[in-house]
Length: 488
Image (cartoon, rainbow, N blue to C red; front, side, top):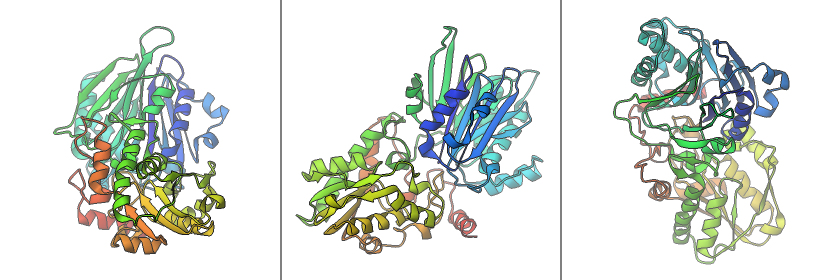
């Protein structure tokens, strides 16, 4: 999971890209980068480890010249989180010069690495699948060029060939030196990408933006045009002209369900579905399951684990007719524990991030609602915190189903052995985490809660819950290989 943004403006775009990355910071905290381009094709690039506010100084921003640019915040799922070389954007100098950012995860990296070295004669300097992607695009663009000038049809031909070679999830934005901005989405639309526009300040033409979440567009005064379609490519020339084309065969929209569960901000809309309203519906359905599986009178109060579970928790309390209270105070200067690397770091960060207020817990039968339970590290600490604060009993409920399978499309859940639900029944999970009762959302209820928001989305990627990988290219051998590389 990462956050990406690209802009074509009538004036300097460096500040607005910086502002956009601040809004996308929840999607990645490992590193960040911005690249801009002048009309003559000169790129300016700055990428650093850490979060946006600490990465860029005034002198850095002054050097990011140009009316076209892109930015990235990274949550490492491939490569090394601590390496600045793995930070995005990535650059290749031919053809023309291309700078690229990517949100997602390629699943045929072994094959692509071999092809690029032996067939395409291209050198890779990192283990990042984004470097793979920019080199595949560059190679296919080189093979699509005819004549002296690059035109949109040649670019779209190159993207079609990228779709044929690359497997996995990818929402991608690239700058082509001297020509414009290219954005495209994988044929299943697993990772989000949204297009927006606004009139130029000087009244001449339009400015354009593509970003991972709609809140970026709305905050900067852009009108949402639509989501980039699965398999579609969007090219915006440096003079602001928009060109689009479907570049994939048999494209089908199957977005990642985990975006709605946890990853996206609630004030965003993706694929026509409000994230906030989807989470409210998750709470409505979860309430029925809680009522079914917990004894009458076993719950005195409902509390969310802040922040992403709050909408679901409010709806659970309303539907069950039980008092809703805020029992945890959140330190907002600590990052999201789920996307922190390493179990030890996550465990330590839980108590730095949350503080249980004893007055809300003492002597009560507490129902805690979380958006999801992945490794269980955070949940176990939170349940113990509730007990330490005086809770009589602790019922723990997840607005998502048990995460039993690896997620290979851009979320760091690579190993089944790390997942607390893998190989365990729900009572066994409760015992492992220290809860008196344990309740999970049903898979069908989660799907219905999300899909109810849009008639255009017929199915979802729910692979981490049901083991069904929508691209059809994820084998048991691949999963074993990924687990082996993570453990080595």
